[in-house]
Amino acid sequence: MSKLLLRSCQLALCALVAVTLSAAASERVFKIYPRATPYTPAETEQNRQFSSALRPGTKISAYLSSDSFEKVVAFYRGIGKEYKPNTKPVEPELPQGQHLQKTFLILDGAANLVSSRKWVSVQRPFLGSVRLKNGQPEYGDVRVVTEIVLTEKEAVKKTDEPKSNARSGS
Image (cartoon, rainbow, N blue to C red; front, side, top):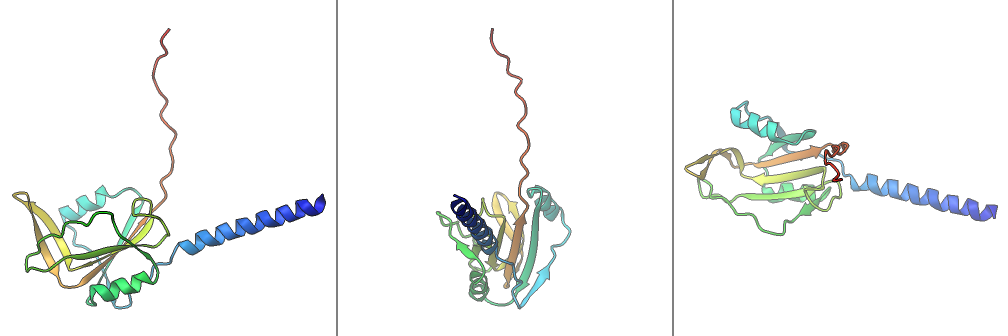
């Protein structure tokens, strides 16, 4: 009987180690693209509004590279899984006739961006600002460079459900 118990404990320990290693392996380490430089957006009202609208615990780091969209995406495919949405997003018309290229790469093994806590978006060209004028988007500071944005979200802490004030009918 003790051999059976010992064997069960060994199997349980092996399973625990395998699950732990699997979880650690699915979290890929972010690497800055070799020819990218950090980008800090200007302090504008639009950027302040954007930052304040982020979910608490969300950290965004941005980088720019003169390398092609394809080259940057190939680099991040080596450490992440490209996310393909079910519907193709509408491509905006940019001022000089450029086409917007954008993709997302999930770094934590999540199935999609909603459940992911760590992903990279790669976009070309860089759009420094977007505002609506007469219901149409107007793009400013358009640069022919590739933008790399790392998004990291802290886990949401569960809060207790508020107690119901419903009265029971008697």
